[in-house]
Image (cartoon, rainbow, N blue to C red):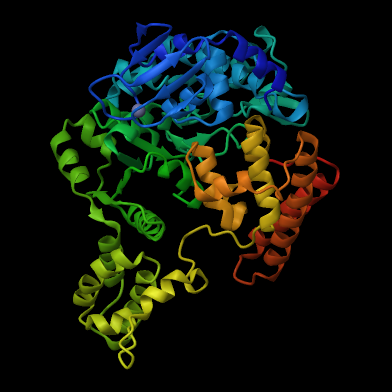
Length: 562
Ligand code: ZN
């Protein structure tokens, strides 16, 4: 976590006119500066920056705040991310509080090793040839900071020369160790650095150029690197995503790079995992239409089906694009077939339509049994959708299945009341399709106190984010996510105004987190033990993991959320 005094010192050297001038053209106007507001469309300037008050205010849309708030809003960053961004602009070295959160040093190590990988690519002709053969331009190599990892010995020597202790290398996921001997995890691979949404290096992906059975390897999960929540290329795509209100999710790093190269600069990819509920907060940012663009092979279609179920149940706009047999977007760009991609991406198959088509295709609806199975699965799927989307796709589903709409909607004909509207409002009866819905939540009181504490002391956000996922906030999830985005929310206002909700000190917050996380993982442990559907090995793995968490929490260690 960033040390509070350090933040205060940074605030003293940051000048708001300086900061905002990087983004907005400001003109002197009396004691203040004026410009066109970046937060709403306007022709005459109503955006005022006061150097004496170190404050900005828009008289058109009401936006206002200090330099940190501006960077948060403009760059869509969290509070700690905005602080780190400002610190790097001012060459200011932030101090981090002891132990668990000295992420500044780790980021510097990752940056150093990333530069070294890049320099190695320059020296390694086969790697350069490989990229050239795949159609990757020099500009893309530069933009995506692509590098090359040589052998293990060379990597260890580099650490020695750079005077970085190997333990540190292990902490950031570059080295591993076996019988007391360190080794490099990524060997003879093309390197794709992975960044946080704010553009900080957090890990690396490596692709073999030969026929190594593991085509891609990622550096392991570390406290900086949470694979299940990040999207490759997001930091480069972010601005366009907000501007174009569109985001394209692909399956691989090469797809992202080649799509950007062809001008599709809102492309991102999951990090070797399927799209899950953990990705939703990042996907939701900027409210873009989300296009799932996967390979048309069986694995790709299955993955697209899961993504479509998840995204439609969470009310996302968008649809699915499948690339026909054997071709992925990267190949198509390399072949120069850009118009086809453009046409596909412009007209994705809406999620609900895709799910309906796939469900019908997976059953033999010419047999009574097949038709009945398809019927039940579509009926339960439709109930996960918002009433409006449901209304729209019900006739289509009925048509594809060859039944009448009333039957599929579950409408109670005798009363004439369309019960699907009521059922939808009751989340208990919604089938848990593909979504990572939390199975338990903290007591509301505690959630609200945590949120109020963060409203009061935003610098504590880091501590909470490292240990908690927004799903743990239960019914306060929306409020917490609105807080993270710096948006207003009626619950936030209420929490702020309600004097009965306690604000914790830093120390109290830590204590409360330890207490709640213990309770959370104990319940999770109970649920896992009772879960008969889970394969035995996974069950044992999770039981050990949760037991370990509880043990560490009892010793006062805030275990990071994974
Ligand atoms: Zn404005």
